[in-house]
Structures are given as structure tokens and as C-alpha cells.
Length: 394
Image (cartoon, rainbow, N blue to C red; front, side, top):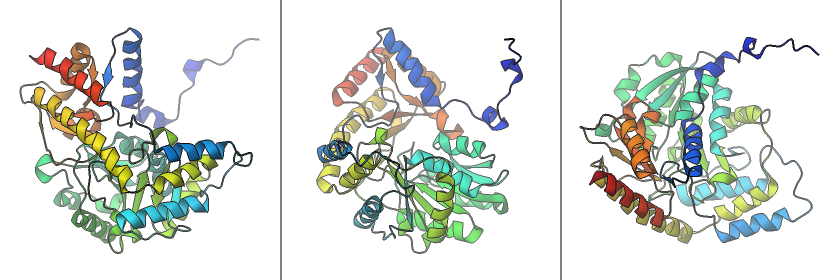
């Protein structure tokens, strides 16, 4: 049969031309190729916890998976017990009381929530505020939603917090949504109730939905804070959270979004037309994970604290300057003035030392002079990475 279709005559939707494959997707394929050649790359680039969840969490998943009645479709809103567990978690650790029936929506990982929220609130052409530097997915999803991106600068001299004078100078009447991320990734800047109160007031005054992406608040941080702890914030604010970092469950894809009932209902309209309910044994395991006491977080942070010391030694070896008060799963450092740029330095470290660190340019132009080191490798591997880097520097 004659083939009448020429693939070269078929074009994707316009939105596809505005985004590219995610940086880490491309880079991990490159690193896999290098490892296939026997080069043994030590990856300090990805923020994917390398240790397992609590043993009771794993056992719950195994036990529930063996039941014959747990493999069918599940409710889009999650089982009531999971929503209650999230509510209890927020009350215990953030001092925030949420209605588990109306103010919490479980997610298949919080990354999907970025898409759901964007589609729920942004029409084509609407403005969205995206931090620079910031998580690249905020920009890429905004492009997929055909929104207009307005970047706002985060500067080291200002503690990587928004410059509200700059924000006020933007065409705020065109802006519908603002992404914030505290504790901040990639910079490690911590959250504060004062910053959250100012953000909530800004959102109220201008009719802008403020969304805080909050997966790092338990890592090397003694005082987790939620945007929703600000009185009245729920009227214009949304918060996403996740078990990926706090409970070593990145591949399990368990997250949540919390806000007022109307916002949650709009987000559910989108979500229920895109994906389905989470596998029930995963929900049961998440409930168990959320019940962990302070000893769990203490142990997680004991490991990361030891690794952080090695990451600091790597930064010092490279001549990079960093803020020791950073929290979260990474260390963010400014490269020496004499080095061309962060991409050049990261490529040299990968080529000569066989260690992958993340160049800050992928987070925006404000990251051009920075690199990021992940703490998600064993202490032994991080120590080996330090030794390899010392050899190419000395």
C-alpha cells in the first residue's frame, strides 16, 4: 500500500516549539552513555534521595499490595484516610489546620500540580510571575499553558527574596499567578513568616494567586514554615508539598496541594480529566510515612549534615563562595570571578574529574555565576568526588 503521509509535512502544536526536553532528562542520558563506556560518573546533580523510606512505610506498601481488593481504580480525591493524614501532618509540623475534605487534594507527585494549577488559573495570554533563578518547570509549564511569563529577580544581596519594588513596577493588572518556592531551590534561602505575610498581602492587593512550592522544608531546617500559616492567606494562596524529599519517596510520586475549597475544586476539575487516583497501597504507605515522628527527620538530617560538610569542601576546593545558612537538599555556590561561566566549570568537572554538578544557568540568567551540588549521594561517593576534583585543581 502506498504511504501517502510524509512525516516531514506534519507539525506539532505551537506550544511544543516553545519548550525543549528537560535539562536533566538530556543530561542523564549523556551520563548514562559515559557510564556505559566505563567512566564511572559520580552524579551530584539531581535532587533524588538515594536512601529508602522508613521500613514501616515499605512494609505497609508490601502488605497492602498483597491484598486482593486494592488494585482497582481509586478516587481522584484520594482516600479519606490519606487526606486526614496530610491534614494531621500540617497541623503537627506547620501549625496549620486544614479541612481534609475540602482543602486538600493529593497529587501524583507535586510536579503534576504545577500543570494542574496552571491550567486551572491561566488563560492564554495571562501573565505569570516566575522567579529567576527558579525551578525550570515553572517556565516550561507556563509556556505549555500559553501564558505570558514575567520573571522577577532573586538576588544574593537581598537574601534571594523577591524585590517587591520590582514586582510593583510590573503590569500587575495582566498577571494572574505567581510562583514562589521557599525554602528556595536552587539557592537554599529559607522561608520566614514575614516573607510569607508580605507575599500574601501582595496577592490580596493585586488579585494574584500566590503558589508556594514547599518540598524542602524538613531538610537541614529546624523550623518548617507554611505559607498557609499566614492568617487569611488561603483566600489567595496555594501550597504544594511532597513526600519526595522529606520521606525519601521521590519515585513513589506522592504529593499534595492545599488551599481554599474553591481553588481545590477548580484544580480537581483539571486533574480528574488528566490522570487518575493513586494506587491504593501507595496511599496506605504514605499514611504510614506521614505518621513518622521527629526521630525520622533527625536521622534524615544527620545523614545530610555529614554530606553537606563534604559539599562545602568541594565548593572550597573550587574556590566557590557559599552561604552556610542554606537549607534544603543542595549547596549553591558562586564561582570565582576568573572563571568564564558556570557551564564551562561544570563541563570541566564532568570531563576531567568525572563528577556531575549542576550549572546554575539552567535556573535562569541570575544563576549564570553559580553551581549547585546535590547531597543525594553516599558519603563515600561524595568523598571520592572531592578527591577527584582536588586532583584536577591542584
